[in-house]
Image (cartoon, rainbow, N blue to C red; front, side):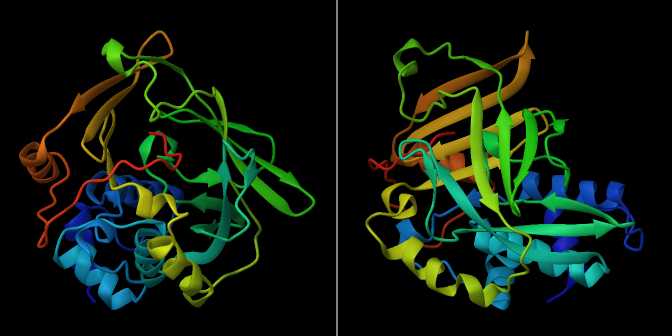
Length: 290
């Protein structure tokens, strides 16, 4: 694996030796704008692999994306190789319908320490929940970013990531009640502890998420990619394009229903993805908002 190939994949041309917050932020932003958060392998009858060599081949050489266990594993490798003090952490994703965090540790995120300050870094949550900058590990502090206001809370050694969202304007009236729309202004995202993890800790859940009928990842095919103004999301045959804060503390969310040929075109033109196997788009009944 080649760090320069990774930099070329994400379009990063900045300094290699500066291990500061500015460099960390720059790398995170380049990755989330170049590498989609997606699970398309599952719906092409291919495996979502955890092996770093396989992830590098998929994401860097074949210019694909991946889910959190893959893209954050790749980011962990890149940051560690550069010399950043980086730790893998495990997260429990909040389910709005169930009003609780997941029982299984299903999310991989990173902690990076710079000058004795700790930051949460996550390139693998996607959609309108994706952080654009590292979050300083401080409890109760609002940390405004372009997508929203993020807030970390700590209670008894457990940390929680929340967000305060804007209002949404949906000009396509037929989509006003879409199940893809987030209804809550204050949204819990996930909880985690600061216990260091290894990629082996995620092997069983990696298998579960891509095989269980209870998993949102088997229920829906999705792909999301951040832009300089917002985010594009493709779920099944439905494409949403969000522009953050387009006016008066409001996000603009536009919907379009695609046919099979248009899905292929959108993947190529918006997400820079060309699939080797046939995709079967799916919009199942598991809760998943954009």
